[in-house]
Length: 65
Image 1 (cartoon, helix red, strand yellow):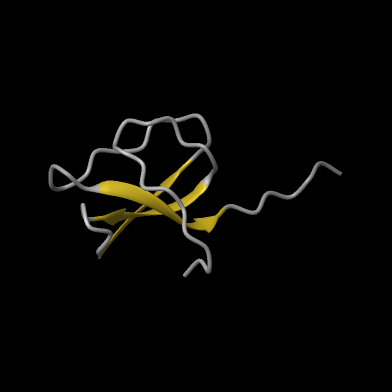
Image 2: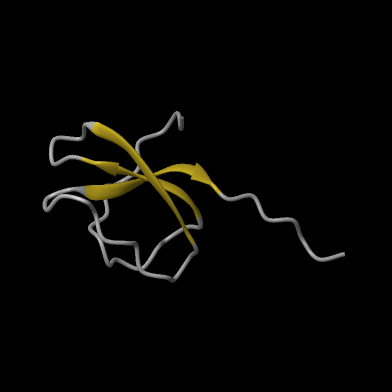
């Protein structure tokens, strides 16, 4: 789990940072549903209207050799 608070993003929003996102309820409660998303791609739809996505694990990319 991340030690920092990230903004809740609505479904369909372009992903600001690649990584693993978790669905959260309208009051911030965690659901356990996760999805990975790549920067610039839209976040997937949620299971229930009113939920959003929060980044829980940023991706770590290796540089070119």
